[in-house]
Length: 144
Image (cartoon, rainbow, N blue to C red; front, side, top):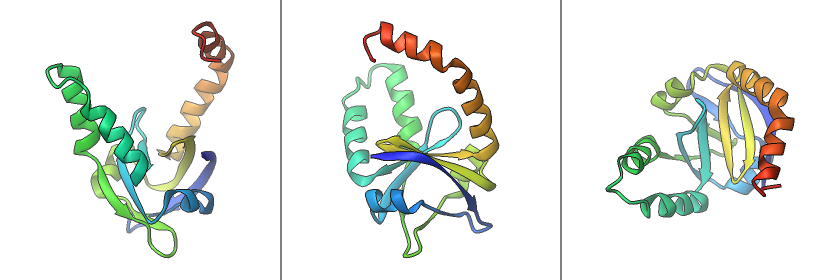
């Protein structure tokens, strides 16, 4: 399971080191794609196959399904993790998530999210203030 928060630096060549704990679980080849809330998603190859299968089952006659599939698949790229645990983040994804300098890598069970550090701090601050209400909503929906 991918969990935890790590702050790393993306270098001038757009290389980013995965935390050791994530490397062990993710392997040498991963998939990067645009995420939600202005972050990037990082999936193992196996998890990406699962996500792809679910997205492919969506009815292509519905505009929202087509749009979301284009969003996820169109920005997806397979990336090799080098011997030092670094991955090269393509320019268009760096720009999408506004990555430079310090970035946050967040383990979210089956994926890693990559955030601009300042955007992560702002997002986390909002969610922390709402955590009690969110938990209650999830409890009322039978999720907790």
